[in-house]
Length: 504
Image (cartoon, rainbow, N blue to C red; front, side, top):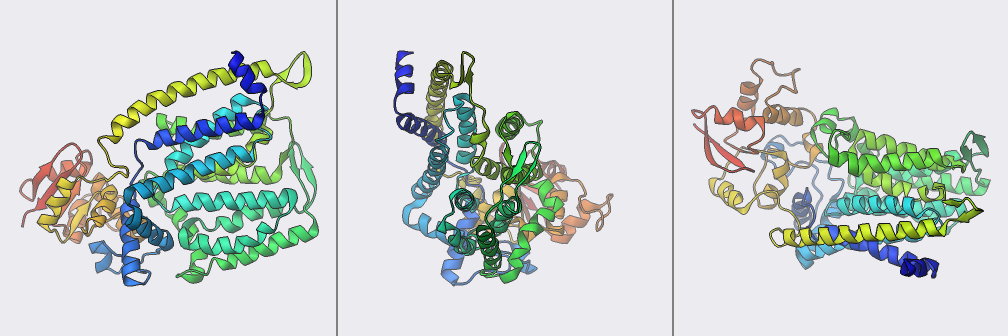
């Protein structure tokens, strides 16, 4: 206890450094078990194609059905794919792994430093929020373009808050950021004008309603921000698809089938314990902080909170952006512990006990997870690969021309040179293709406007004329195929994969 007291009474910068080190260590501990390869492999293959062909694709590649029907491909992440290709070519999986890990811990460290003036007001709440922030950032920082999306959004919010509080010339870098953003991750580039609008709307005039308060920006600053926002919006057109990119981010969110079918796009399910603990708890925590605070809530902060809360309930993948956005203001609304005997003084003894408790808890967690992660990493790759080499070899030797494949297997198959039916590029398959894929996989008609409920399976199978099926044995399609041995021959299966050939 004396050690804790000494640490607490020491220079707060030293204590801040300790906390940064602890949370960075937690982040790296999670990374010991490798990182997700979800979609990474087809992004890598796309980058290779762009570099070798020196052009940006506008129609589907690596999919036999997409190529045959010239399905449109909005390659809005082309620059990320080129970057990944070069990074992986020079440094391999280790380089990719370290790049993602280092960017993640950079964001964690910068967030703690940014909030250093508020961090020790209520150590418990600060630690809980930062712990969740670390878990979510670590989980989402892997080899996909949304990695850059989070970095760009962090920088944008930093500049906007800096401009709001102190004025800064960094505001003039936003149009440049716009051009970079739309080519690295065009699907979320509309944030370049959505977020500044929150600052513009709340800065028009001084206004107060209940706990909400608008703080007026000076006319010249409000004008400059508005002009920069307009320029940045038009700068989004500087990309291979031009002005159509302005509409693209909204197109994805309109596709109800995609939001329903793809787990990462689905609305968060509170019945799932992992989603409840990882996603709902931090949203509830921030909400409670805003409700409980005795301070006035800046309308700008409230608009940003409301926007990302809404987006989170639309799609669980927005939890990472919710955490980044709220990290810029939530700490200032956390109410400090007060000593009843000494008004307005921070209860140091309370914080010392909390520091001791959280230190023991974090240390126990780190030791336990380190042991588990080390055991895991001995048997797995740094970047996960969704399909075993055994099945890759089987499919390549069989050379199917019209393969039906599980959506999640698509990226790995593409990387290994196997043309797929569907994969992670949902925008290629939006509409009938995605509905028909889901109808086949689940043996349930999701496209009843075009296919009858009585005979939709036969109609779909005749339409696509698959000569092979690579499926998850737990999906309904597996049961359908296995009950028709006169039409479909099971070549090989285990708990994760099943490969069928269509009999002529």
